[in-house]
Amino acid sequence: MEWLTIGAFARACRLSPKALRLYDELELLRPARVDAATGYRYYTPAQLEQARLVAWLRRLGMPLARIRTVCALPPAAAADEIRAYWAQVEAETAVRRDLAGFLVDELTATPRKDTTVLELRYSAHSDPGLVRPANQDTAHAGAHLLAIADGYGPAGAPASSAAVAALRFLDTADLPAGNVLNLLADAVHGATEAVRDAAGTDENGTTLTALLWTGSRLALVHIGDSRAYLLRGGALFRITHDHTVVQSLIDEGRLTAEEAVVHPQRALLLKALTTGTPDLKLHDAEPGDRYLLCSDGLSAVVPDATIRDLLTTAPAPDTAVHSLVDAANTAGGPDNVSCVVADVVETAARPPAS
Image 1 (spheres, rainbow, N blue to C red):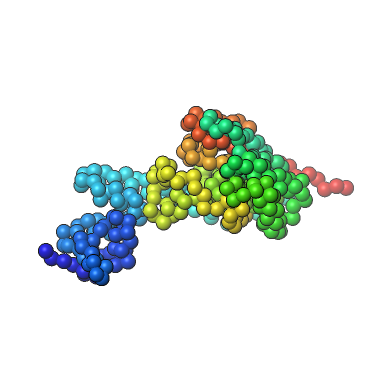
Image 2 (image 1 turned 120 degrees about the vertical axis):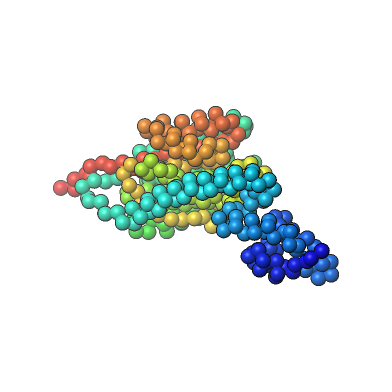
């Protein structure tokens, strides 16, 4: 039998030796023989066709988990899978195009005149779902503060409640827009200490996703797998990134979004409020924006497309939060589900005091 060294095989199929070693570890493209003494990998010319297919699919940007599926299929079925993948890429590209347009508009928007002011119209609703014996979520909506915390462990409910309670002073504070991120970071530090006191042990904790309203901007803090979404111009944008094992696998191309939904570790967090550093950032608000904060009791069972439709059709935040919770329970309600919805509305500026 003719043997090809890993270097010769790499040159023939246009995959690097480093990539071949990774595909061996992932059992995607195993060498035909491994020298027992040296550990050196050898391949056969018959493996070149599959290796070239893997190389082409990687150039398409296909995740490794999906490539494994394609390589296991007969040619006709593999072609159908590639066609379906590319249709998905085009759909996701359209979403990214909308996001790019949103970012361009946000960065080039003309500053608003002082004749109008923006304020929030908001509502919150939390439900235990249909399976869990108790509700460990905490939801809050106020004139300045919107927050969702999803507790875990035996003391998850006190943990989530402590996190939100520690932030509530922001709802009545006179907020200086210039250093709002520093203010929020300090408040979150206090919330972290409050959660440690309430949780007692490391097996208890909570996620936290919150928005702090300054009158024209929203400061976002996020850690865990609760989420924040923005509905603007009919398009839905997720403005947080899940801190979970499955999201890290998706980011690395080892898992598809479809596979993540049924992954056995889909609920495993990489970071929570007492175990990592939260994300902090600012968002400029526009009249007509609708923001959603939700626990994973919604996002894990209701697709983003359905969330978008419900947010688009609900006439008011109160209607929206109840529609979203009802949708989660209709989908089985396997977890506690909490939603906060806030609309950015334009009102006439108050005349200066005489």
